[in-house]
Length: 74
Image (cartoon, rainbow, N blue to C red; front, side, top):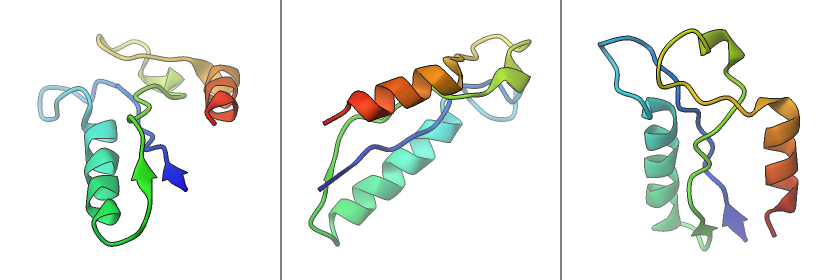
């Protein structure tokens, strides 16, 4: 069994860095791997954050894009 950590790259302002939303889930999965027999694959750093599109550094692939990528991972 494997887990795909998900998180977006979005700009929150100067108080948090880009990547906060995927760095934290990635660390949680790393810690989980030590306790449970699972494999973590690379974090998926794209999401559906259209409400952050006006901020520099935000990546957006939309619902369809995220669904397509996640259903193709085997």
